[in-house]
Image (spheres, rainbow, N blue to C red):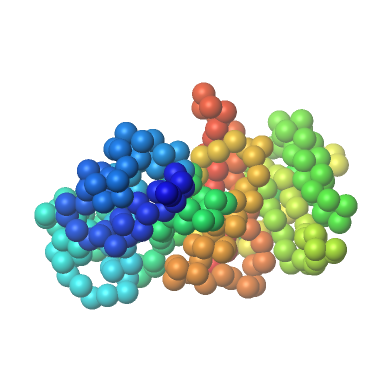
Length: 289
């Protein structure tokens, strides 16, 4: 007999095999795998992070985005393949998820997958309720003021930088966005020592110009460029390792984006405003060509 995780895996596989069929529903899935609707709904939501109907919607629209970029299928055909009766209803749903119309997405010609098939065997995979949005952005040169260090002696230096920044951030003038603080992973002099990564880390606030820098702080610059921007919600103190692992190991291989080897860094914007769960908006920015 399958355990609960194997049941979820069977449900995910069944969804994938029948993704383009209009009558794909919770009733049909539970009938196929022999599990009650109540328990499958609860277990699926707990493991994957979103209810089955939401997962199906995100998978269908992600595959629709793939077809828009890699095929010349008419929008009406893609709408039908995605389980929609009309192009109008398909376009409305697509726009609510990808923040643009299908026609504009096709014209832009960037495939930015939002929901790939969930792999229950890889429990480190990012849950569906974490990644809210993926977009491309052009950004001018960024000026930052804050603290930095290298990780030769471990990652404690990162916590030290943030402790100092939170203590003294009100001393920083000319801040351009009070909503976020920024953490930069600078890999320009990256190396491995005893299998531990060594890189330069910066905890800072964005400023209009690096003027009147407070005592013991430094100024930093990031070049202008194009970025893939991943938006999620989480606690600022939590590790972003699962997010970074998902982006570089799973998302990039399936997208059309190419990493910018000339800009060997990435950075996270951490929201200063938290909700009742202690979570805030977090944006992870990766330089691309």
